[in-house]
Structure formats: C-alpha cells, structure tokens
Length: 333
Ligand SMILES: [Zn+2]
Image (cartoon, rainbow, N blue to C red; front, top):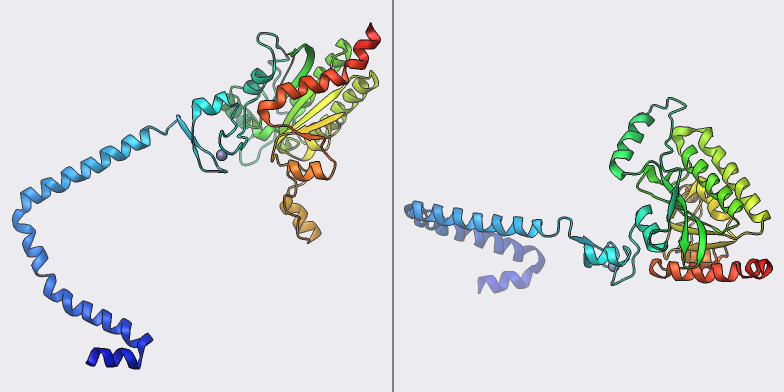
C-alpha cells in the first residue's frame, strides 16, 4: 500500500529513489553469502578460472591471425574482402565498387600487354638541392620512401602496347611522398611526352598527387611549365594526350599536365581539385555544394569527359585511341 501510494504521488522523483534504496538494502544481505561460498573451493575455482581465460585468449589470437594480410575491410560498405580476390579485381570492392588505391606497377600490369612495357629512366632519383630540413630532412624522407615503396620516385614512365596501340604511358604512385611532383616526376614525364612526340604515338598519364613537392621549392613548380610545354609540342604534332585522374588529384599536378588532356577521364568518386575543400570553404566563407570536388561533380560541371571504372579502363582507352588515331592512320595510308 505504501509503495503504490508513493509512486502515485511523485513518480519521477520517488521511483528511482525507491529502487536504489531497495537495492542497497538487499545487497548487504546477499554480499556476505556470495564470497563465503566461493573461497572454500579455492583451488578448483582458480583452475577453472584460468582455464576459461586461456580458452578465450586462444580463440582471440586465432581470430586476429586470420585477417592479418588476408582480408581487407571496405571503408565504404564495410564488407570483409579476401585480399586475393580484391587484387584480382584490380583493388575494386566486389560489392560496392569502391576503388582502393592501386600501385603504379599493378596499374601498368593491368593495362599494358604482357612483356611489352619498356620502362624509361628507371633509375632517375631526386637530389636534395635546397638542403631542405624540417621535421625530417628531404634526404631522410627520400631514403625512407625508397625503402617503403620500392620505387625510385612517384612516377613510372615507359612505352608499351595497349591493345594494338603503342603508347607512351606515365603512371603516378601516391604511396611515394603523396605522389608529389618534384623534378624527377617532371623530368620523367617530359622525356616521356617528348618520346611520344618523336615516335608519333599517344601519351597517357594516369595521375594521383597531393601537388608539387615542397621539399624542392621552385624546382618542383618549374615542372608545371616544363611538362605543359612538352605537351604543347605533342599537341602541335596532332597526337592525342589522354589524362586519367585518380583519387586524389590536387594542386600543382591538377594545375598542369593532369588538366590539359585532349580527353580527361577519371575513376569513380575520385577527389579532384586545386586547393582542398577546407581551404576553399575558409576563403570563400560559403557552404560547398554536396559532392564538391568529386569526379561525378566535375563531370556534371564539364571539367572531365568521362568517368571510367578501373576494370573497364583498358577497354575504354583502346576504344578512345581507335577513335583519336583513326584520322592519323588513314592519312598515313
Ligand atoms: Zn565496398
């Protein structure tokens, strides 16, 4: 009777109070019983406890062992993907088509006919002209990246066959210092483009970059003019240049060779821009539209010509080159 009347009078205040007091009243009665029951069976209880712990530990480490290096979780759809299948699918999620980053060598392998790729300037390496020191010196950064990536710099260039087309192909790799464009990237690409002009073949550059390499100061900025000048001569010779933008593609690279293709393609959902969205938002003090700086947004706004999924890239490049080189082939006959 008392309980129900109290509840009726002041529900919100008294109900919790009642429950806690009734709890504390109960526990003193219960607590002395429980510890008194467990200690006598000390040995048996302890061993049982240890055994349980071991079992748990055992299963946990097993579970941890399996995913290491075998499975990758897709950041988009959170599916666990078997690494071997993911590699076979060119690092594209089998469920949601999320494009994972892919190394330059793997990409070249996915595009070029077997044994046709002749790499150019494979051993060209950067020099620390400015004696740059910051949190880490440029020399140390270079040494660490050579070791980490097994690459000499952020681009691989060479000439190979894609379908029936001989192509001057340059592929950037984001894992080397964020795909930054220093003198080596600029020089290797310039030589590639010049080779393309000389051999009268199309140039394809697949880029991914955070921009110019700050460790090289003005030397990295000069690469913008140098690569574009070489592309100018290539264009004058009426040869096609296809630029393929992959995630992410920013700053000095986007402001030079990546955005002057006769045809500009992009991988789905790649982030592409000059300055990053945060900088633009702070400068303009305006809300950015949804999907800002994605490949899809830029396709709608006319910067890029087509979005091509990675596993269709080779086929589509062949199709475009068939079209772009048709006039030239006809003229040659
Ligand atoms: Zn996915």
